[in-house]
Length: 164
Image (cartoon, rainbow, N blue to C red; front, side, top):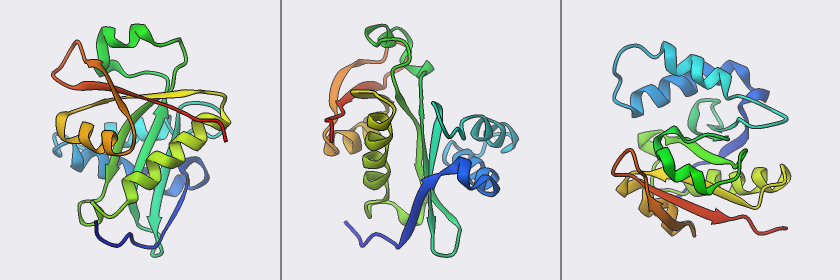
């Protein structure tokens, strides 16, 4: 693993001027199809502060976005696999790290911060739907396979959030 860049990690709601940067980063990570507008609009809707959805943003010392991740109560890609979860269960959605900053701990830092957020909001577990490559990242962070997603070839993973 490379050395992690110096960064700040906080709620996107506290830095609304970064919504467009986060949306564009997610758009590029998804293949840059169409325009970034819908991605920016979606990012704005998930930039909550007091309840889910919440988005964390990692920025460098220069103020540029390095990564972001959302904690929400839905995971549409999981299809029927969400039936095992209670309503309101938190799901990790759209984790993204800028290509030049990957494999240096930014994703792990954001995943750990999500655990803290879930705990602060009274949740005892987190869920994620991940493609094979991404699933390995979550497994290395202590997540366990739950089931294959029913709508895709992705995997549903879960992690117990241990009280502090």
